[in-house]
Each structure stands twice: as structure tokens, then as C-alpha cells.
Amino acid sequence: MKLYFKSLSDLLINQPQDGKTLVERYASNQSDFCQAVVTAGYLSQQQMEHAAKQYHLGKSSNGGVIFWEIDEEQRIRDGKVMTYLTNCHRNKEKAPTWVSFLLKKQKAIPHVFDAKQCLFGQHLLPKENASVIAVVEAEKTAVICSELFPDYCWMATGGQSMLSVAKIYPLREHRVVLFPDTDETGQTYNQWKDVTLAAQDQFHYPIRVSRVLEDHATADQKHRKIDIVDFLFEGLAS
Image (cartoon, rainbow, N blue to C red; front, side, top):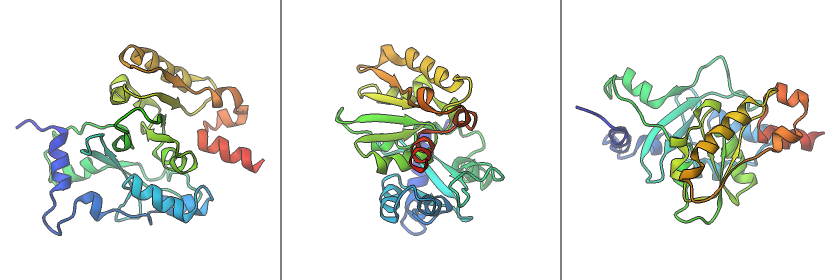
């Protein structure tokens, strides 16, 4: 039997044990990530609670955060499980994993199942072109920016190489601004610009790639490959 991402969505939604979906069962604003965001001063507790609810953030059994990928039709595509340190940086000693991978290990879904991922935050896509869609690399960045700049609808690719024409195609009816991380060579900016140019003829509205970091980040910041949140808060601290 050929399985599609909707099969995973059905599995995640239909949980007869306690009448709750996995998203509902593991919903929490007390993951190590949520606590670190507040402790590090990025958001207040109230802001973090609001963002956690808006993005349906979850908490894994070891305290990690679950970044659910849910599309604009509210179908669950997958969930990324990540752990964070108290300084709000990712714990690189623990590699991220996916809910679909864990379900395969538990033999809850077939090993051959191929989850169809989408943008993190895609479930927030407005029905009409009422606000600008802002796309960043990291889920963390989207969550924090959603409270700092609520006039934008914030989404994340999940990584530098995760941006593609297919992934941003659902945004085609909207104004879109991309905020790539920076680096010493401009590789990330150029890579995202190439995707933008390839996608442009499929969009009704222009897609912009922000040059804020390319034009204003210091050499040290580019060496550290900072994102827009790092740039904002380092600027406030200086």
C-alpha cells in the first residue's frame, strides 16, 4: 500500500487512548527551548506562552522541543525534535530527530514511509494577502520574531539547504520576504536568491531576499553565521 503524508497526519490525529492527538498530548511551553528563550531574555513568559500556543510547540520525554510542521490545511506533515541549552543555543551533542523516524522505530508506521515536510509555521498562512510572510532558516528564529514583529507571519525552512521552489510554492499568493542567515562568503544569501529567482515566475507577488545581514553584519558576526535574532539582540547589547 502506498502511503502519503496524509496517512501520517491521520495517525497523529487519531489517538484513541486518551482522545487526544499527539500534538495535543505533548503540547507544552515548558520544554528546554521555551524556558531558554525566556531565561536568555528573548521573550517574556507571556510572549513565550503565546508563541508556544500559536506554533503548537510540544515537549518530548527528555525535555526537548517538538517543532510540528503543519500545512495550511492543518494537516500534520511531521515534527522535528530538538534540544536546547540554557543560553538558547541548540545542544549540538544531541542531533535533531523526527517524529516520523521515531514512529518507524516503534513500528507505528512502515519503514518505507516518506514524510512530506513543509515550512514550519505554514499552518498560520492567512487566507488572503493581508500580511507579509517572513521566512527564516531556524524554527527558533520564527518563534521569537513572531512576538517581536507580529505584523509579519513568520515561517522557517528548518535549515539553509531546506529552501526550495516547491517548499515556498504554497506562499505564491502572498508577499514574501526571506531572511537568510549570513556567512563570510555570502553563500547562503546567494543560494536563497537563486531559489527566489527560480520561483519568481510562479508567484503573483514579488519575493524579496533581505540584505540586512549582508550589508550590516560585522565580519565577526558573518564568521559566526548569525541570524536576524542574533543581529537584533547583539545590537541592543552593544
